[in-house]
Length: 353
Image (cartoon, rainbow, N blue to C red; front, side, top):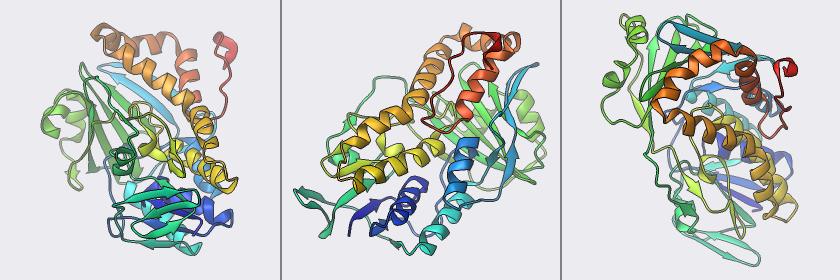
């Protein structure tokens, strides 16, 4: 076997698809059976939609035309210039990718990785030999930890909670509602369903966090909950490197800053072909350089926005500033909407958009 992929989420399945297209003998090990749900915002940026389409994957959902920031009566919105994004249920996305992987002839097995060994010729995973291993085993990657690549961070941890509501979307934008200590992300994922994810440093039940957004809570009051609350976190996860010999980390396993900018799936879809190119070229270390290029914009923007909004005065001023400087807000949204890794144009003034 040329490549073993540990993790059958979107990052691992996309990696397997690219590997199959490159002519590699590839298999996927995933410890959970069937379609897997996960707490996430479920909004695919235009770059992610394009990356999926290039793989022949077209998950149904609800078109997204842009991003709207909301703080009380204040609003600021910007459209996607690169075409629509798409709100897609995580389970729908997973099912579409899994179907494509199986159609490509990739073996998908329900197995858990327990032991990884390496030598000059490849890796041995629980007795199975492969040329390389891609660890796409999620935010709290056991393989990253076992390889000694975990890099702890001394910041106040943020967590995410998500619930779906049986309700017709009232907007074709992702709405980001800002409160003092949390944000709520409203994403249409079908004609009769919206997802509402809350990111916060606080702990407590979902409904307690939703109380920080009275206008949003009132809008949702009459809607039926469509499924359980799902949680994820701590969101900030670091890795000292993305490669260790013949093992490559892809997706959240490679390190994650925050869900604030909504680029998680887009980044995974861009990392997957970069990892496969490094494997096919016999130079896994090249993936580290590509990972840094692909994630540079995300890391810069997310660190900057997180750092700035830790200050209460900045959080309060954020949406009014976006209202007063619509060209700047539009440029920031446009940067996020581009395919991950694409070089952004410099924002030098009002006419730069």
